[in-house]
Amino acid sequence: MAKKNPDNDNFFERVYAIARQIPEGRVTSYGAIAKALGTARSARMVGWAMNASHNMEDVPAHRVVNRNGVLTGKYHFDGTSLMQQLLESEGVEVVNNQIVDFDKYFWQPDIQL
Image (cartoon, rainbow, N blue to C red; front, top):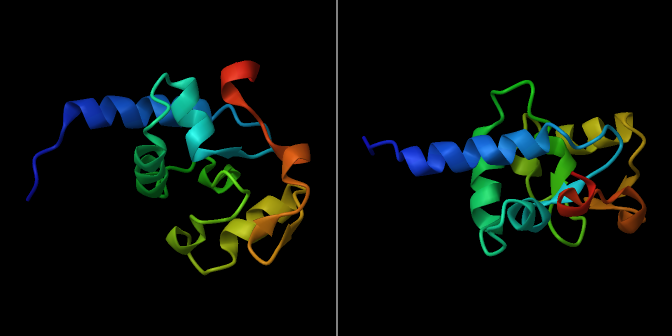
């Protein structure tokens, strides 16, 4: 069993703190969260944090997508369409696993926080 890394735990909590502030009906990207944290090159680690958050009801992981608006995290949700269903229930249009009019829904945490 791997040892827990307290630095990762702290990073993950910082990611979750930002994710919790994404407004309903808006989305952001892994890279935008990384940039807001001052670690612009750690988008992949933000993805790991989002993947680890699926048992946390207060982290809206469905609102975090890749830089092109593609639902790359969808396979980490129960059922392959749950991420899309959650976004659509908030008024975000998704076609072929990609957010339609991505710029309209994009929330930029480094500017809006």
